[in-house]
Structure formats: structure tokens, C-alpha cells
Length: 506
Image (tube, rainbow, N blue to C red):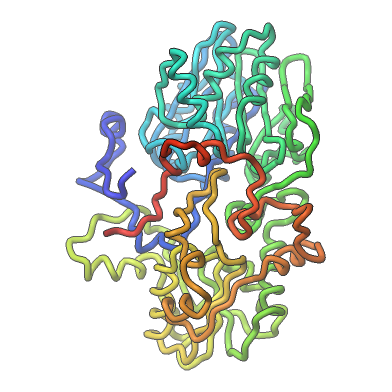
């Protein structure tokens, strides 16, 4: 999708656009990792849709482009899908009233495959031979394009451009007698990363890929089972955390109770390390670890590896805050909010001149001069992608009177693209893949620059270092060690790479 794409006809039909033309200002997003998606489901509760909407509110950080809910009332499925934030639609009573039933699933979307148009908004729904089937997907299939071509050649008519629809068709084409067997057969065909929530006229089904790349947790609320991407979605409704859905596990809930299926050979888990670095909310528990505590540990390890004499530690808000706390606590250097973030930027009008556009970073971040003027500062951020925003923030610190500006990243250099649901540029767009450390330092204008080492990242997670023979996480963006086949990328004919909204404006 082009960064300056006009609002879709679907969006206009729903009255979802305001003004002439909007875009995310790429100057504000140049160093931002885009979240994947978030999923939520509940079975057996009379207020299923309202609870799902609350769960999606808690997962809003995982996708801000669109949201959807599908419910089932015992005889009919009901669907509401909209572009925009959860609160734009699902805080309205009349919308929830159009979603009756005691079972529902929901999805918040940031697209890494497929355009941002209404027909791609999940959960997707189809009437199959055995009844209705809805599915929401967090992740990305690494053979989705290949399977899509095969399905289309076989006569399938695709209604969206998202890889999630492939799963619908695979289930529909299965000749197995029982739904769960058809579902398992479909999952045996796909590759990549996925956490799924699915709804039939009898069952709520959750599934996690065999390596557990994407997270999925099981909770309970007033005796009803819940599936969610993160524990923060349980907290918002006062639900009890039960356990993580295991890698390769399929959990099924119906009127008879719960079932667990493990149809895949066991493999050493490889959860995505970026859940700890960036994606998950700090108040979530992922894989038994507090995300907040892990990020503080990253910061403390960063201080061990690359500290220099400074007066204050300053986070780049909000993602750099926990690591900066850890850095400050370990180094003994005071923590100061030297940058204040405006949380209400949203979308900005296309600016009339480049000079006005170049000031756009101040709409999102502004220097707290009183905390940094005349001081030597260390800036802490979670990661660096292109370097555009980092350069602007360093300049902002100097303009506010900082005497020295040292930049530290609480993750290793990103050297390789991702194919599992994170929106990253190709290698040519990754600053660390095309520049050495000194070149990067000079480009962003810092006095010194340092990244957390790969081994240091593992030490912060409680391991002696990274074991190349048995890495505990999917760390491919740093190491190039992809944990699954990359079938679509290996095709002879060119295939479109994942959609990237990180491209800078020309």
C-alpha cells in the first residue's frame, strides 16, 4: 500500500474518513516497529461481544488500523468490522447490541499482508458445508502466497488479500468428517507464525504454531473460557489467567467442556523475542515472564556493556521507559523524563511544505529543557530501524541544550527482515544492515552509540548467552537464523514482500 493512498471506497461507504486525505507521518514512524495483530475469544457468556470489545481495547497496541468482532447467538452469526480504533466503533451500545450471543471472537489489525481495506478486516467469516466458521489470525504465513496461488488455480475465489483467508479455504476443502480434523489438516499445510482464534456454531477453538512464535494465553471469566494474545486482555475484565496455550497445541471449548489436541511432533519452542523487546504491553506476562521486568533487565545489561559518564538517563517514550529505568538503577545515574510524548497525535494532515513536515516529530515528542539543559545525557530506546526519528530526537536534545548526547538501544542491531508478522523493511532499508557502528553514530548525530549484544540479551533473559545449536527464541532479525521454511521467499518467480508502512516519504 502506498503511504499516500486515499481512503478506500469501503471506508467511505462506512463514513470512516474525515477530511481530504490522511497518512501516518513517516517522519514520526521511521524507527517504529509495527505491531502484528491481537486476538481475543470467549465462550459461554451472555455478554460475549461486550467482553470481547473490552479485551480488544487492552490489545489495541497490537494493531490500530482496524478491529472486528464476530458473535454467535445459537442460530446466526453476526459480524461487525470497521477500520479505525476499537473505541471508534465498539464503545457504542448500538453496535454491541448488533452482536448478540454467548460466544464471540475479536481481532485488532495491523496489516503485514493485504491492504488496509474493509474486506481484509478480521475476523474473516465463511459459510462452510458444515456451518459457519470465523477466524482471527495473529502472525504471518511464510507459505501463504504459494498456497493462495494453488487454491486459486484450483478454482477458489478469494474475497480478501490477506493470508488468513487461505486457512478458511483449506478447512473448507478438507474431506475429513469432523471439524477439528479438518482444522488440523489445514494447519498441517501452513508454515510460519500463527496464533488463531476460531468460532463455529458449536465451538471456540484456539491454535498456536508448533514453535510458539506468536503468543496465546488461556483465561477464565465467570466460569467461561477466554483466549487472548496477552494477559493484559484478561486483566481488563478481571479474568483469571489459567496458562499459556502450548506451542503446537489446539484447544477446543464447547458445551461438553474443554479438549486439547497436540497433532504436531514436539519441537523446542522459539517464541518471538520482540514480544519482550517491543510488542507486548509492559504489564503483560509472556511465557511466564513479566515483560516490564525483562525490559528493565535489558536496560541493566546495556549499562553493564556500554556505560559512559553522564548526568541523566533519558528514555525515548514510551517504549524506552522500562529499559531506561533498568539502566538508571544499575548505573546509579538519575532517571529523568527529558522527552515528553504527546499521546494524542493520531493521524496528521498531509503538510503543505517539506519545512513544516520536518517539524512533525515535535508533534509526537518534545524536549523537557529543564531536565536536560547543560547536561550529559544517555538516550535509551528499544530498537533502531531506519534511524530517521533517532536523528531528529538527538538534534532535539542538542537544541534543548544537552551538552553530550549518547544513544543506547536495548536490543541488538536489526540486520534481517522478518516474515512472521513484524513489519520491517528489506535489508536495504535497515540502517544496521547497511552501515557500520561509526557510520550509524555519525548519521544520527550522537556522541556515542551502542546496542545491547545478542549474548547480553540472552543473559538478561536468564541464560548464559545464545546457544547457536538451541536458541531459546526466534531472534532471526538479529542473527538471520529463521526458525521455519520461507517458502514464499524461496520461490523462483518474484513475490511481493510484506507490506511495509515504514518507507520514508520521497
